[in-house]
Image (cartoon, rainbow over all chains, first blue to last red):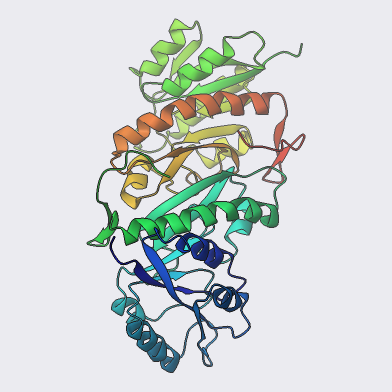
Length: 212
Length: 212
């Protein structure tokens, strides 16, 4: 059996998507392993979850900027990831925009999950955007991260119905289990090489014939 | 039983969505009836389908403009619809943009079907846009028409998976049966008053609890 792919998860909040990844990678047959969990928030529940799973949990002081990491934090992050030989970064509710430098160094190796059927409703409060727009279907999307906001190549999506009496909260609750299902699955597909990025577009090793 | 709602269908092409509406309204219990079919193309298969169903089929010469009807054609259209007491206009592959005057006269009484999960992929070649973007789910949307392109309030949507080897043609073939299912259903919902427009937003007479 090949050695599992070392991955890092970046999280700012409660870390429910992190938990689904930890649960999946707990299986020794899973082709990836969580090498470390990184948060810009010292008190993030995500760091606690990592520790409970025996995974390195590192707080990176983000610096002064509101939406980005400072250059120092960025440098430190790249250093840690290199040291641990991390090959894939999974963003799981990480509330900082990654620098151009970071994305160039990890080109095609950073993925994110977003609670809408992209390209609809990128950015903040996607479930609220969906309810306000009045769509009848929404869902979630795992995608490679590029320098845009939720614009990178799509790996997997799941669709859920929107009910006429939904609020952002009830819709989010319906989408979340689908996030927990497709995020580990996307990590599996990348780790086994079933899906790769070729010239900025997704390539499947074999035609799958159906979506997940 | 209430008298069925008199509707008009506007079509430019082969009229497969028209056919699904004709089939539905063929049932005497259906709460709407197709009063007339209008096309800007004299040789549209849609007009032939209408005649085969014993429905008035009218060709409106569109005039010189490419994407719109001439003012004369617009006036003639409004006259015919008034004469037949048409209460709802269903666009089914009608390739002309309706005038502001038309939409004001028929405010909240014009619906359209679009082969994507709006707000993703408005405009032409929606299935091709979806395949090129690499989404894993697409579908179709019935919506009220406003002065934007495919921007009006959403009535119903259906979601279909996109396969990794799909082309615009194979995806369109998977979406089409869903169009044929939800378009008559949307007409039924409007005709019975189960769904109405209130201040430009959709209102359901009773909370449905699930989407179709």
